[in-house]
Length: 283
Image (cartoon, rainbow, N blue to C red):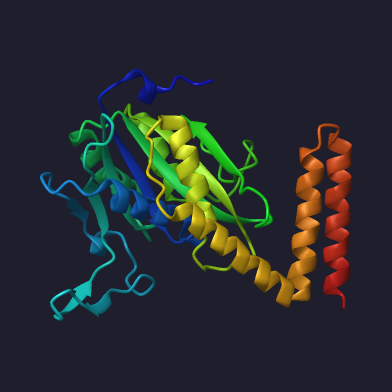
């Protein structure tokens, strides 16, 4: 197992980052940060920082929002990246980094983030991500955990080759800068669309707690996850195509988890699944 820098220190400062968009299926990763801010609390004694959206974000894709504040005044909210310190929690200082995935100049964006990370003397940068995948909502959502700069894009393939998001680029830049990195991803059922998936948020926070012993207060999140699963059950029961698809995914998932399941059995199940999908497309 790779060396784990976070476990070697009693008093530590870490940064936890998540980005909206491509890396945030079901808002699983961004909601994880919101949960941390709500349960641990923002440290009002330490100033937050902002990375200006005008430098990195295509505002025709991530548009500013007009809304009323708590005093009823109309305010424009820009899609900036926010760097927010939390209150000390069990000997750990946490720096939250949240914002949309940048549209351009990823190198400069990562440099700006790392300036704040190193200034806060963070010894570890954690990136969270959620992606749509062929996984059923009725089973535990798979997660991946990667220490170091070699970050898999998908939660079940360490040898993945293909498109990557800003978390992977940021991890690599942090590794080069001498900051320890941890990447956590969760798979979200690909039939949920962009509806919030609290079960994905719960899976990420559980994985984060397992790796860093943060003792994260979960509050009502487990019940929210169960309610979400019941809602997905109801949706699947109303849509025969989705119901059949979920059953196929369950069969594939269960086959891979059987002790006697071999590579040939798994490959055979996957081939059958593809044939069923192809047959369905022709009707």
